[in-house]
Image 1: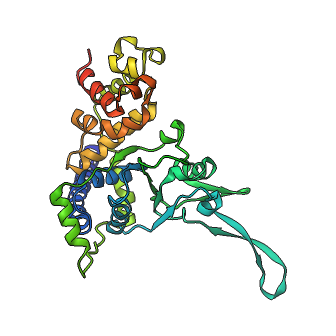
Image 2 (image 1 turned 60 degrees about the vertical axis):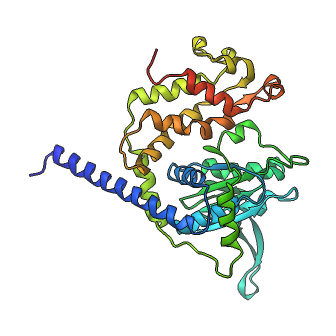
Length: 347
């Protein structure tokens, strides 16, 4: 006769087996992505973390760094339906979500409305240069990201999970663009900066892309496996001390006028930050910490997981004032100060 303790041990054993499977899958996924993408391992890992957490990613990088290719390759290794939309000033919400069209019924029996789904009905969507389209179109995408559904007229259509959005922004050409409001930027789990390759990496890119044979990755996980792993990530336990550390880190990002714990204020925050991170930042730190722990084969979240994810989680949630821009202070500089000021141990 089985006992509750036996059932618990069996469940824990199954979860640990799934964690081990995900760690192995991560290594295979890296190998497949590396067939096409040279370097940028940190960026690929953050994309996978966000996908496991059911989050979305904002990619910052100059043209030509392989952001589109990176997203497409990751979708292929996970066997997900992929759609890319180039955002332009004349793009309408219906161009993304889809629209109702009038269709003639067979046999001449009149007409009816038929819904034609847009590119948002996919698993993995790349929104290229999201800041080049007007706010109305941006909002249509962001509603789908938050709610997992699309409203057309009086009808609401559910998006099939998993649903993952990677939006890109070009930091060079800002003229004629529509920057995302802070409230909408906050809906992205990570803000990831894609940097230039090293000389050795650039040489490998040139050799790999100017030959006659193009490498193609193979699928490592199926969509069904991914959905199961998303559930496992949320079940990873987190110690209260780690949760408190994430909460104190987010709280310290707020200037004294918006901070109920004035003693936690950091000098750089007081001088350069107008608005700090929202509670979504704390949620993202812990959720992403769970995914990071699982990918490394651990079934618990450590302080280091939170620290490692602080920059991509917080950098887009800090609104700097004029003094920060005048002194050439970057949001990453503020995050560095927060990590130095806020200790793992409660004080």
